[in-house]
Image (tube, rainbow, N blue to C red):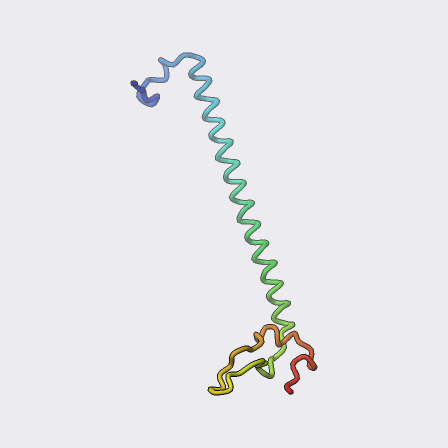
Length: 103
């Protein structure tokens, strides 16, 4: 099979239909490029908005955080006194006072 590169053929030798096809393909390529650029801009805008939203949520979350006054240990090893089960500090700060009372 033998292929000819269009760049090597002088444009004057092209048939009218070939010139029209090349022009249409060039226009199609431009439209695709513009569409890809728009999609990229939209993607970047979505990322920016998501970061802004996440930042707002994090700020609200940080404002809600209360200082944790204690670790809530549920079970320790009787021999070594190592902690076996404890409640995560993120959960402890949302617990009510009676839920974290030590007995």
